[in-house]
Length: 115
Image (cartoon, rainbow, N blue to C red; front, top):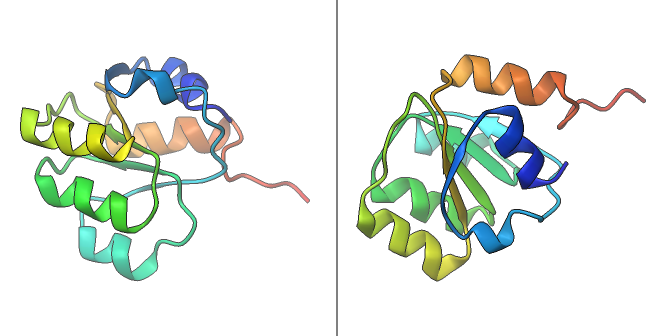
């Protein structure tokens, strides 16, 4: 699924790195605990979270994620957006709740292999 499709599914607004929204992604996770992301997430390209601090961007960089979606209309700081720009990470904002956003993305086929 392309990041642009996720944007449309979640009625999200792109806040930075819009030139990368045609990237293809194959998995996602929803989490507010960055320690859990570091400990349990593997090969996740998209992070959905309601946590707004620079550590979210740093975690995504460490985990080679290409997109972060801030849910519940959370707004990242300019410092966070600059860090994302520096690392080519697409940042989006959606008014959906985390649970709802995860359900929409999963039911649309991202990470939902039916082999």
